Length: 244
Ligand SMILES: CN1CCN(C(=O)c2nonc2N)CC1
Image (cartoon, rainbow, N blue to C red; front, side, top):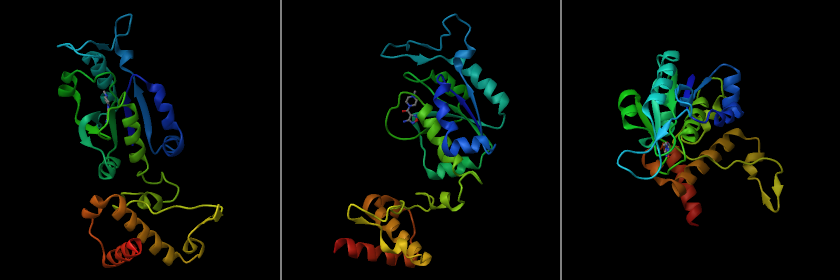
C-alpha cells in the first residue's frame, strides 16, 4: 500500500511512524511519501493561499501549488486515485476501509484554511471523503485516520491475524468488554468466564456482550445485520438479563 499525502504540515505525519502504521512502514507493507505544496511555489513568500473571491473570512488554498504537488505525486504513483478530505465527502467507515485496503495506493489531499479552490477539485480530485460531521483545522488528521484504518487491514500488519476480524465493525457489532491484570481491582472483578480457560464459553460470552452492547448503544448497526439463530438467542438472553 502506497500512501502519498499532499500537506502543508508534513511533520504531523511523524505520528504515522509510530505503532501499527509505523510497523507497516518499517516492514514495507506500506510506504508514505509527503508532498508539500509550499515546495511548488515560485515567490519569495512561498505563497499557497489567498483571500476568497466574493469576500468572507479566512483564506483559500490556491490551485497552482496544489496542482503541481499533485502532478508529481501522480507521476510517482500513477495508479493511485486522488482523495480530498472534506466534510462534504462520503462518510468514511469500516466498509470503505476494507475497499481501500484492496487498492495499491492512494493520494490523500489534506487541505487547510477555508478549503481549496474548487477548480482544483474539478480538475484533479477523484474522490471526496469525510471522517465525520465536524470541522477540523485541516485534512491531515482525517488523512491519518484513513491511513490507520486501512493499514490495520493489510495482510500481516496486525500481530494476530484475528485481531482485525475481531475489531468492531468487522463483524458489524461493537466490541465486547476487555479486561487484563489484576483480576480484582477495588472490588471490581474480571468476569469468571474469562478466567475459566474454556474458549468455547469465552467466545460465547464475548459474542453475547458484543450483541448486547450493540443493542444498547448502536441499535442502528443491528438493523443492518442479520443475526444467526444463536446470535438472536444470545441477544434475547442479554435483553432479558438487562431488563431484569
Ligand atoms: C479544509 N479542511 C476543512 C476541515 N476538514 C474536515 O473537517 C474534514 N476532513 O475530513 N473529514 C472532515 N470532517 C478537512 C479539510
